[in-house]
Length: 205
Image (tube, rainbow, N blue to C red; front, side, top):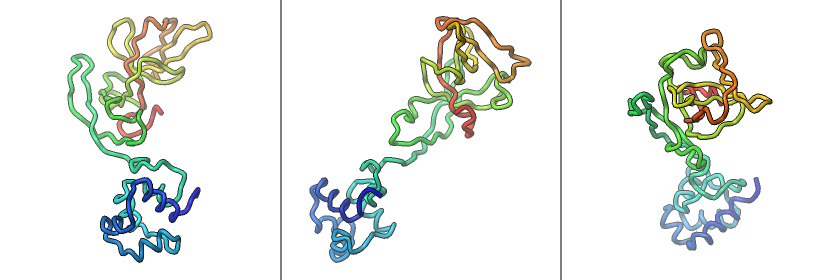
């Protein structure tokens, strides 16, 4: 813990330009109790802490004294939906639930979509009919798994391996039925996104 509850409560009152009497009115807590909090003579229980944080528009954990951002949305998750896309027609087939951290910009649901696997090239982790959640990317990191196109071909999912000579290999997990493809140049590939989850399991993270 980096600070005390009392110090943080005094600090956020200054930041919000709020008087003690106004805090009492907003929280319906007694002036005597608020005064004890401000002087460090009492520490708010969880229910009272939540009431104070809501009234002061701040993060409960920050208010407790921990070294986290003051933003009340820090560390919170929100449930929304993302689109499942038919890659052949680029039409939305359905939507599926997607949970994301509101304080992490890259987790924004607009950065994601989902597809149904059309083959078993990445089995057993991703088989025909399984849902892969894709994070939109146009570049790649060596050794990660991506949804991509080869020279405007059909979309496929492969692990991208950059060889020492600068060429690119495309690896399937099911190598028996889908042999590794060699000697591509970066210009041959169109990266559509990175596979980050399969259904609700973080198989490719």
